[in-house]
Image (cartoon, rainbow, N blue to C red; front, side, top):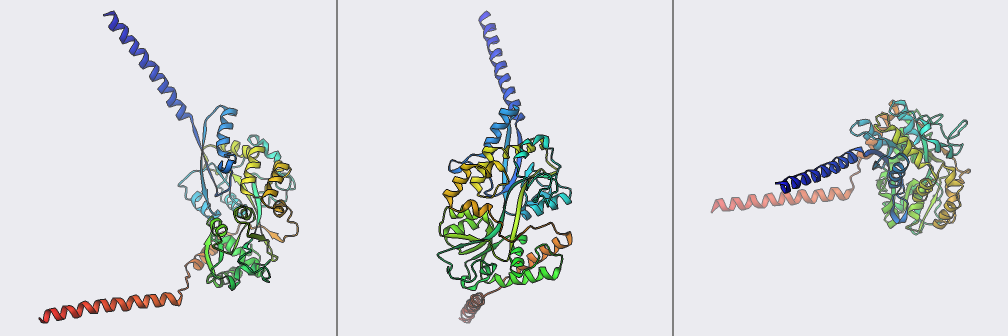
Length: 412
């Protein structure tokens, strides 16, 4: 009897221990918070090719610093407009987003961003004075950086394949290269309305922030004229197409040129003489965030030295962080990619550049309408008509054959 009682007590103790561990495990798992980060594709060091995994490093740093477990749920978008559509739908709540300047301004105007508490972002001291602080030149979209922290910046230019584009071509150095019929079927255009219209507006000498509807329609007509020679409208797909040599010319962001050049040294790049877009991408916290404190600490972590340099080396975009710009390691890394890479990204004083600003709702509706008109106005080539004609003749012949056969059978 004593043995049975002893055995029962032992079993009860074991079960109690198991339940205690199970309870602790359950509490531990439930204590893990999820931080939802929504960023551009190819826009953070992700651990590939021996790079720092910035999100994993943040998770580790956060636990070591604050004793709490955080899991980063990281997803990407390919354009500001895609990000805005997802955010404004309310279907998903994000904690950190990285829109471009004009989109930051729009989100502020629509009361969709939360003011930042800089007590949680002490590394803001690492941002260069041109981008943050009194007298900052590049806070035009969010004066005083109340809602945003600069992440990267840069300009748009034209990438071209030197083996496919004539080095003596008079269009080199100009937006006109994007409309050169000699390269029909080998030209890639932006698949977002603001940048695509920008290429036409700069070419025509039109203010990219104009309120004049007729000027937007002029740009639309030029884009329509370009459609017949465009291979496709792309965003992230540009990497594969330009690196593989399946396209010759594309308008895109300067930082991404260096990423492509690393995989195809036949590529080159220029800022068009007519002018181009200067942009700043900034980290923001949406008003709907359920983890604002963690989001601000995430932003602060990204401004610290190791992730800031790792992200700059991974993306090749120009950094507003002085720890990056002053790093000899970073300069040497850029020189290994391309001898003049650092200068191409940072020494751009001679470039005629302007920024997009947020447009009125009326103009945004107009641009969406014009963009839909451009994308839906498909030119049907003569070949299509021939193919359709052949199909129609074949169908008629097929029907006639069976009708005649049926008549013959009924006769006999």
